[in-house]
Length: 77
Image 1 (cartoon, rainbow, N blue to C red):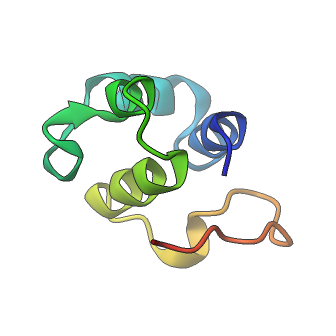
Image 2: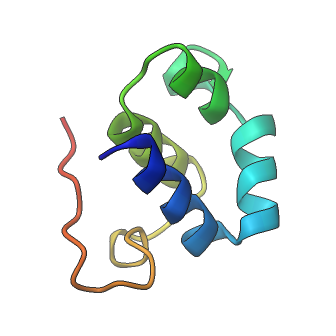
């Protein structure tokens, strides 16, 4: 997953306004008490950040991949 794909999914799954705010404000313990935005800036893989964010927000697996149901889900590492 690339940063571009991460942000596309943030917009699709959480909504453009709420998702960007969530990524900037929600501190995630699994990311070392950083926000998703900070973790990405610090070089954490977008795939990892995405799974942590979705886990924290209780997003079901089947809803994590946005509107394109043919999009392959990035595996967890």
